[in-house]
Image (cartoon, rainbow, N blue to C red; front, side, top):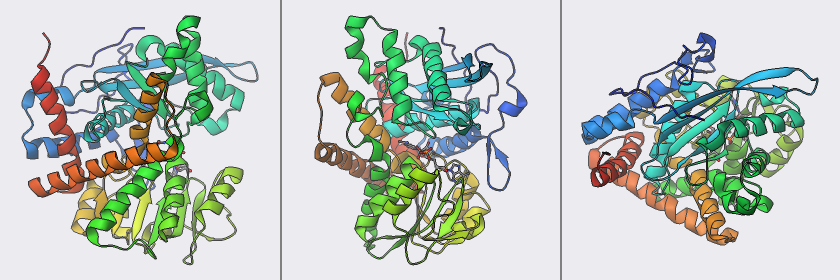
Length: 456
Ligand code: NAD
């Protein structure tokens, strides 16, 4: 399979071409993310705004700016899959590789109806900033399939995953591009991905390729602690923030949007600090209980029922009431574009700790800043996942198996270092934390490009 290079442009643009066959993408496919207000936004244009603000402020070298404003490779694959009833469906999957100057491309795979090329470009760019910021030797990529997994049986999802993996071919690889779980994908999907990839390798070499994917089940070569890693990272970040502000987490109140991997783990790991979960929202609805919702019991309920809807120990509320809940901390851990120009006005919290990628759009950011609501930005706050993915990759390469204490200790160290780098950049440039996180990441990329030069 051939990789295709994107055309150079000086700034990010919302490109809506199908790069593989050069045909214009279907309009309906390139719809951007739909917010609760029904607005349609182009996520890649939002990344451009964030990038430009930081690049201007730090005076990023124009040659490096043009490189980082473009993705390296974009792969669109239309592939056939046989359904349980014998029909064949053509599905569309993407892999966008944004940059690999610091190491192999790295980023999750998402299964969601909103997956389209500009969304994947945005998510891939965020991975480049995240890996640079946290000082791990990876670049940035992202992929996904435009499906609602709820519409498919387990057997169909397995065939979809295996066919897509096969179609990606040598566009992925343990030293080249390493996927991981994201929205609606999990350790099981990674196990199918791994198994399919290994089938394409000579039998005597297979065991040396298990680091082609991270977030695998522990029995299949995954790392202990990867499942909770993103939520654990979010909570380590909140601990640092609380220490800095002299804020006591004990007795504090928090609300969480999204109760999947990131949301449920963040919620569960906040509880031992004596913090109280008072409202939760997911795709099935929103619930609240001012006396507290037991995150462990709710996680067990969600596992059984598929969502928070109808949870007996809390009352149902609507979206606006959820967003207006008075609390200390809001952890958005669902989708992009949830904190907008409108909903940022509704929030009644002191801190937004972004578990999701891109939950706050640039207009929402401005409102949060005006209202004095602090923010731990996504590329910093949710970096625990990719950090432990890196640990998993290392363990596979060295045939090692670390225990949970070792994983957590090393994760904590990386998180605290990244937090401090952003705090320093915010102080030095007198800017907001999102821009500071970008500056910390872009500085590292700029240094490496300057050291290595541009080939030839
Ligand atoms: P997941 O599929 O496990 O959970 C997603 C959750 O969001 C579900 O509870 C779902 O019901 C909810 N949700 C979806 N649409 C919603 C909506 N419109 N309103 C309210 N809730 C909605 O996904 P995840 O892995 O937890 O990922 C969540 C976010 O965190 C994504 O932005 C993802 O990119 C980001 N992230 C994930 C990881 C990881 O390791 N999984 C790492 C870094 C960042």
